[in-house]
Length: 404
Ligand SMILES: [Zn+2]
Image (cartoon, rainbow, N blue to C red; front, side, top):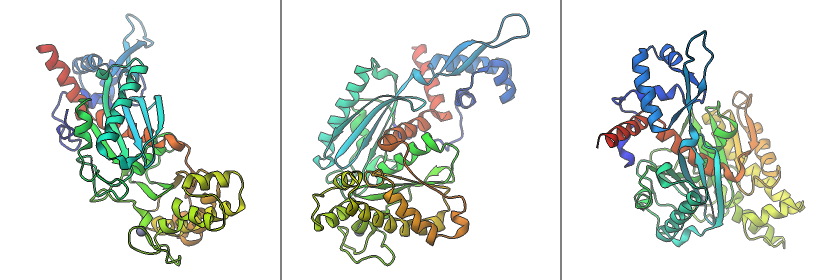
């Protein structure tokens, strides 16, 4: 199934089952009678559509509701365990892959070192092999798969799933990731920036009712996943949230790999803070080394992380004034090494942002931690495959298959 066959904005001209399914999607069991009352549809229409949903397996019977007499009416509920989603969070040097159900519950996952600079063909071959392993070792057939999502460490044209000039992914520019994965798995394949999917994962786990959230990843690079007005904001070319190359106000004019000077990443990214510590004589080469030193209560590491937090906070203060988020979540290797980065961010954001914008602003560490990406990738697929049109497609495909 090609991604372009489903347009969530097109008028729903399908079976009506997809619209009915939305009433069951929150997991609350319903009777046919309750569904008729909720939708205003006739009992016979409801019966037809419930049967169609039962046939897909998305909905299952869950016993009997209490009745005032006679035969108890059957009750139905969303059955998220009926189908599966595969999710991959690919970083610059590591990967986490997961198998989830349609509620985003993680059934199984695996972690591995992975060098994204090996290029798309070997990396995606490996991803497909590990996806197959995840299905097999959990006794799930590929026919249970609803969709796949992959997060990559660079900008992505979301409509095509192709990376757009990703600076740390040589060989990946405009590569057809969905088409490659679909040679093995014939399901919708969605691709997005890794920080975008982390924002979705954190929101689904800890802030499901929050419509304005910023997820800031502080690791080798610094990026933001922005959820505004309830929707992920990707921008015109998929590069929204690339905060690493904003100039730090009043910061040092350190040269950056992008060609500019004084960028946030050049001052507060993993390479910069590691170089700062190395110059002081500590064995620090990567963001991970800095994180370990801080976790060992190394004073110099704590000081550079606190300053990195201030630099990040001074840039975030502008974002807060512009976008008025209610939650800022800080994740990534440097933010997870104690509260040092977060403390520096809070210091600057509360100092420099307008009082109204910070009145109810919460700035916290990530609760989803390193599973934010896998969880968010799964949520991306679930949002896509459980939309009314997609459910209608599933119903129509079942009907067509039974007619032949
Ligand atoms: Zn730069």
